[in-house]
Length: 237
Length: 313
Image (cartoon, rainbow over all chains, first blue to last red; front, side, top):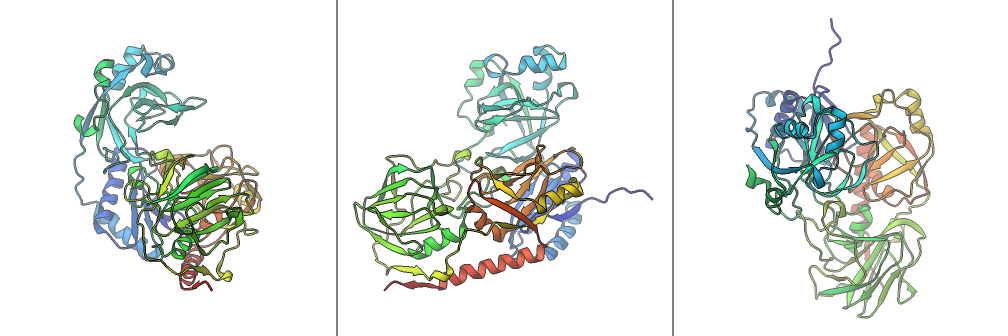
């Protein structure tokens, strides 16, 4: 006998949400299970379910306990977990976003180079040739949580986060990368910037990416990068 | 129709309705009135649907000049509302005349007052809701000199009405918050859970619509405070590395990577919305069943309020 844990686990998260936990790691395969379950639950459109939120290795189902009780919903989710194993996920889309690296647009490029022992040019070359996977959309203003950062680029977060980082800044920390959809504080190391619009509170969808999509931050000259200002990510499919 | 000119914007006044749902998967929190009971009651008093947009007024100093004849109600926290420097009765509708000055002078009880006008407040809609969410670039707090408009001017007069006094919530001395432990309560030591459930915490001044930061004894983790980032339910109590809990609320990020020891039950969120920096609170663990029971009672209370609205005079 082994004491292998049985996934997924279905547990309450407060009185109006259920958390479905898959294996505890950031991994495309685990995330595909997450995506499959989220899609399955959405397609069931059960009254009383308010939000279906996929993340790295969890799906949160927000529900109205006045419309559906915890136990019957948890039982339904168990059935949907099985059903989800047989669905085909839509193929992710690929976005190539023009990005200017270094100088005034990447305040942490030198630091990342020093920490990794690579030249700044090599950092940019490795980073910009990576196709990052969009694991899920969250935080505020639709931040895409990106995975797939090569091992040699892994550096810690800043000891003291910056109180202001401009929208479109492209950075990394630990095994993650991101492009900020709006101005906000952040402890990531920012090495470049894209001017493509990543968040639009006035329209639908407010965020161009979906989990399962891929993004590459294509290096371009500053003039070229700035030309993308006001353009939607959808123009760079 | 022009309703008010903002003479003084107060500390933080925003237009809110009952928020936007279905957008958390796009990284957008629901927002909406923090004390939903008071907000819905304010709307009923002026004959609006419960989800009409109104003003959420934090603390005091808001001052408005009335630009047209209006029907208004004020509920929620008692921030000493006045009309033309005379006390304004709360939890009832009142008729305002062009030129009247409405002001909120001093906090007596609670933190957030709600001001509804017949027809509701206008305000730009973002994803189906007028709730201002500053961090998400969805509108701003009201500014000095701003003109606030009515969304749907109704010419038909309604009789003034009030909520019978026994239905009016009392916000003081109710600082016992019920919680459901988890989803990461197993990431804390036995001592940590004990600290959480048996200590007095105080609401920090660094609290806002995103969340309530608490001061008190540090809660002990078993092995670090980090988890793989996951969605955050409303009312989740996150404990980062410093051991001090943060209750995540209406405008909070929808996902995060810190352990969550427990979640405030939905029935207690309106009460929490009225807690003020410096106030003390304690946590009491309850079962999921009793949390749902409390929510059903809360819903019945709201329905009773709707029925208990009576004419004045």
